[in-house]
Length: 73
Image (cartoon, rainbow, N blue to C red; front, side, top):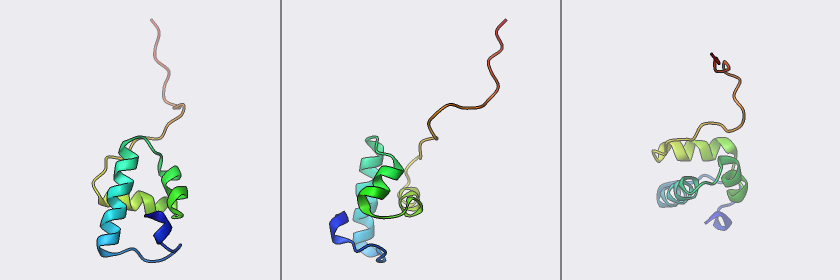
């Protein structure tokens, strides 16, 4: 699908629904938003918006957190 979209072109109608479904499927199977953005030639924000519009529950950011350390007593 990504090959048929020109970079920066507006995606509407059935093409948008198909792209949203493809992104949702890949994201649900573990792909990151950044990886999907690179694969489709779209921005991070575009992919994030498409996933949100298609009702995906977005994962939290990975990596170490800077919250309070657990009290050891």
